[in-house]
Length: 149
Length: 273
Image (cartoon, rainbow over all chains, first blue to last red; front, top):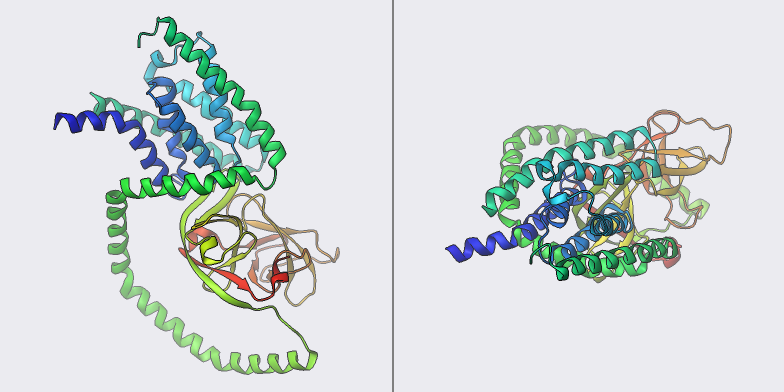
């Protein structure tokens, strides 16, 4: 039993990413976009071995399904590089599991998407996604603590 | 590994350098490979089915519960739906007689005028697997691909023969379909009964509007029927799209309104050119 729990703890980051990506739903989780939460959390806030490569694959899959060629993949690489080179912000030790950094990451990306094709409908839709992702970041990252402890 | 160790810091820097190097490569690829993205799509044809299979296995219990709830809801609505459908059937049967006469007349006229239509010789029925309407893009995946004889550029219609979208990328067992409301969708159309042509482009979210009418004096109005036109030489002509809502907007069918579609395959290979 102990071994199973231990394995589950180790594969949890990968598991939750696949689950959120697969359980896509129109309006609530289009193109499995909620998978960006564990992608960000387990790459920058709570770095997990081999997760960055896995995250890159899932960014690619979100890109493919949402019709944005390599958008999230490129921005993930940009953030990964910036985070690696800087030591001004210690992301793993920021308050509330790094929600502000996550909002910054998502916010910049969504802002680029709003500017790339500005219509009021898209603006509202993207704003909704930004809020929805930010709100769900709290319970999903809290779930990690419950499971890994 | 301790964070203050030199090897940890070195590994972190190497990883960051690799990520930084990947960025210009990806950006150059995006600029160069536009609009086909052959390499990216080719990679997706391998990665997506694998990830989809893993996701299907892992999420099976959750999806089974969701499906059971759906079934229960559908069953409870069955009686009301049945009553409604009976009424619709009665109305449709009474219309049939009028339609039969009109069809015969139409056939006779077509023979007299020597009109030839490209008609689909085969249809491939497919289920909508993922509805991916996000940001300004509106696409969905269907569970039929090259193995079923489906290729990029073919049209996808609903069971009421209404255009839903055009296949934008095709894998072995799946296809990505660009819905009419996608911001990149731009198709040639014709207004029924007027001979006026134009272009229908998606607004990125649930809607589409018509523009660039061949007759500059033409003003659209509610109720006008829109069908595909072959003027751009890409789509087969005569596929029903929807009715106009006002001067420009068209009521197009959105993928979240349906769960199953048909891909039209044509006898004449030139139909899709």
